[in-house]
Length: 288
Length: 324
Figure 1 (cartoon, rainbow over the protein chains, first blue to last red):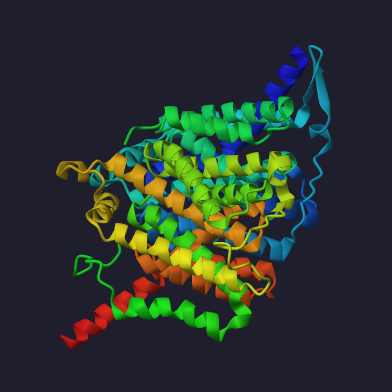
Figure 2 (figure 1 turned 90 degrees about the vertical axis):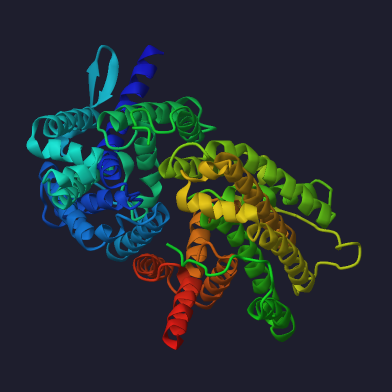
């Protein structure tokens, strides 16, 4: 019984940390530019497909594809940000929602055209497969790898945000972009770099998540609800908020599907609505 | 930002509006083979206007409006399946249920900012879809609810295969509801909604209760969506689970933006154009359709702000300036 609970929590933490690494970019850009970007999942999809392409066409090892997925997704992100997103920073949220839905549709169609509509298979390297037996409970090796990578990335992110000059520029721009510009901070460059970082992390998450979340052209639509869930429940503009929210939601989703399979996805939506009623600005959000 | 009107709305009918409403009447006689499509367009147009009430007039971004459409559809359908075949009372019952549901949800929607509202509406829509899917013994699940038999309207007009009765029934109901909405929107209440949309923080300064107004319009919009859903169930004698789904909410938003938000006729025009285009291009590979719709949305948002009617308004303003 205990073994079951521990196993479910462990799986939930792994799933949640994957959601976090993809959604953290969305949280920061939402808090920074106040831009509701429903197309964020598309960057994760880009990373996933880059990873698959490298493994199948170039025969590259899995671990090597991950940094490349990060870089390609970041480049796509910054290109789109400079050309298209930038024009809509001052637009209404409705316009941003419509624009990003349009981008999602286009990305799904492009992915279907080039890669077909089926799930992409991934062959993990041997040392990442299988399970370890600890204290009488089986833990999946790949999920341990996921949690480890995301934990390391979170520490790195926290370091960048708290200890570097760029991080303080981001924090200043999130708090008050006008005042930050008045202090001489190049806010446009901060926006572009942050967007690139966020998209890159999403791409990395997409590559990491092929085994856990699957990869097919409808990925952006399937999972955008979860990413938005993480961001709206956790509060925008921070790292801690979405992290806690992602872990909670991950655990509850896995537990819900395991213990109450008849209700399934209902648990997570109900939990989100409840949390949003109690914390309308998110768990760690700023009250506007 | 939508164009600033030079006159306050006064509820008078102008020639264009009368001409507009003569079109569906003419289509009934001139295009007898398209009556089924026609009634679908009328129903979707009413649905689009209901979304415009909360989106265009009150500024609430909702991605789950199809929930109320589905609630109305399932209420009317379930009533008919379980023995109550009278159409008009079924319609009223469906409207009531949807209105109550909208009232309950409206309390959640007025809290928080845009993102919170988006997520709450999306979450409610998804929850309802999951519930309808799991309760397949009642709702028919993914297979849908069939066997919705409706007795003749007012005991006289039977529903036939040609869609004659369905078309006229839909037209009359849509027109009556539209009249009511038109009266509402051109009233001080409607103006206060526009005020809330443009500057919600300043409205309390002139004594307008913002939260209460938003709740009211959300409830009413849910009721109208429920009426549209019930019409669909009664005219097609079937309720599919897609009436509740997210794709329907997203498609509706696209139609509304196409026609132009914040204008009474935007939803009607947008729905008509979208559905006619979809019918015409339905042979095309769905992948291409999705790509072009996406590109179309991006282009509209970047360049053709205000949709079709907004573009026509801008054109008219420019012509007027040239004459002056």
